[in-house]
Structures are given as C-alpha cells and as structure tokens.
Length: 396
Image (cartoon, rainbow, N blue to C red; front, side, top):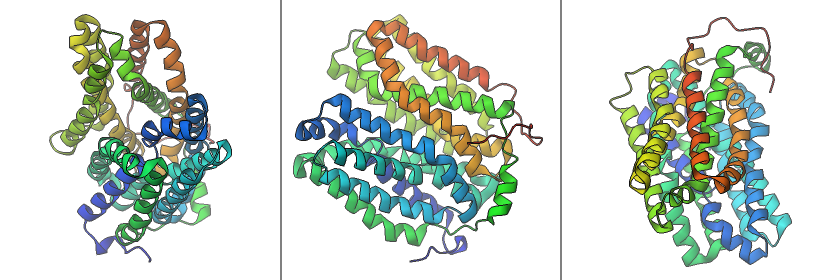
C-alpha cells in the first residue's frame, strides 16, 4: 500500500501517527528488556551478564549502521525505511519469543538493533525535516513528546502482558502490534521525495568535522552517556542517599513525568526561544538536582529525578532540532547520524562504566555526571549557523 503524498494529510495526522509509532518502537525495543531481561535469563538458563550484554550489543547496531541508513534516507526520502522498521521489529520480537538459547537470543537482539536503527527517532525526524524544512522544530518536538510515553506506557504494558501471556507471549503480542501498525503507517507516512545518489554524494561532501560539529558531537555523547547511566542506575544511586529501594524507584519515576512536561513546554510556551538557549538550560538541570541531593540527602531525591528528567527530555528535542537550526535541512539525516554516532557508542558503555564508579562512591558518581553536564554547557558556546564548512570530511 503506497504512502500518500504529503498534501493528502494534515500535519497533525502525520505527527500523531509518527508519535504513536515511536511509542510502540521504544516500548518494544529500548525499554523491553528492562522488564523481560530477568525472566528471559531464568527461562534460558543464562546469567544476567550475558542477557544484558546482548542488550548492549543490540544498542551497538545503530551506531555502526546509522550513517549508511541516513544516506539511504537522503536518497529515498525515508518513508520506506520507517515502514520497514515495523517489519524488522516484528521479526526481532518473533525471534525473541522463539529463542531457546544464547544463539537465538543473539539473533533476536541483533534484529532488534537493526529495527532501532531503522525506526527510532532519527528517521521520523528526518522525514519531518524533508517535509517542513526549518519549520520542523515544532513537529519534531510533538513527536518527541508523544514518543516519550514509550517508557511510561511500555514498562507497565509489557509487565501486564508478561503476567497474562508469559514473556514469550509478550514478545508475540508486541510483534502483532508492529504488524498492525504497518498498514496504518503506510496510510499516514508521507512519501517525501529523495534525491539522485550522485547529488546526495556531492552534498554529503560538505558534512565536515568543523568546530561546531565536534562541539555538538561531544555534547550529545555526554548527554546520552548520562541518560543510559541514569536509566540503569538512578534507583541504586538514590538508595545510596538513604532511600529504601521502593522509595528510590518511586522517586525515579519522576524522570519520565519531568521529561514529558518539558517537552510539552517546548511545544507550547518555549517554542519561541532559540533552541540553543533551551539546550543551554537543559545542560544545567542535572547538576542542580545533584546539588540538591548532595545537600539535602534523601529529601533531595525528587529534585534529582526531576532535574535529570527535565534535562534529558529537552536534550532529546535538541538532538533533533540543533542540526536543523545550525545547518539547515540539506543533508539533515546524514549529518544527524554522524553527530549522533559517538553518542550511540557512549550509550553502550554508560551502564557498565557507571556501575564501577557507583560501587566506589555515590558522591563520585554524581560528580562524574555533573561534570559531564558542565562540559556540555561549555559546548553550547560559540555555535552559530555554519555556512562555510571546514576541509576535513566527516567520514562515518
């Protein structure tokens, strides 16, 4: 079923469809094993280190494949890739539900990683930029806002499915969700025009590692390192300051609420501010929360969670908007992929590195992430719209 042309649907329909697709994509991949990891390991007789090592392997797949996929998006417009992601997710979930050992689990995780490379936020963001150009900031924010419900809805829904159907049944149920979404997204997803390969190749020659590219790459790498550290260890970090694990988990739940709230503010009252200004503020909310936790002890735990959630929620939007603001819509997909590649590798390493630091000292762990936020803050200075590229190509 071919996608309609952009003129056949409203912006609201496109944004809502993309947002719903992102909820399903994140809930059934990025957040899936947070619920299923332990039962999968028990059933297959695999230690947690092996199971979550394979989860890290799945996160590494987008890091290796993103630039090639982004080039393909520039050539084809991205609609077929976004649609194909639902089929790849469905296959990966089916393989996971059928897994009988480490080989089957490895195949499933690699397939899921490819689905994430095809279907998570960079692809719909690139389609929105192709559709709306410099006016894509608000649609990107709206998709990020809706897609942010992937954890809020995904964790409890996966937990309920596991209770009712077992972990294998939960995988098959999510696979059916993606198969059901495929014809729906085929009706919604705009078929944006691509460009001939030789023109894309010529344009990509202008994507170079100048100072602004390096600054943004450092900023996003630090941000995604911190995000994965907090997603894996925030309850443990808070418990080190006197909270029970139940209290720490409850406080950590404020992360999602804060993230969705700041994305809503960005969509409404903050949209007139320069994206660089909101990014600069976002880099400071985690250190402010860390300071509150250090000074106030367990009473500061909610402020720590809110600071992390607010900063991460805004930085997710910034990752989609800043490349557009600085360089414009041309080569957006490829430039975003190159910029995001260090962040993807940092994301893979984050939980293991932070576990080692946290074992030594909760204060040192807070100091590490807060220090990286100050590095991010410094990276926001001196960034202006770049019209003249440097001379070193940003080869992926």
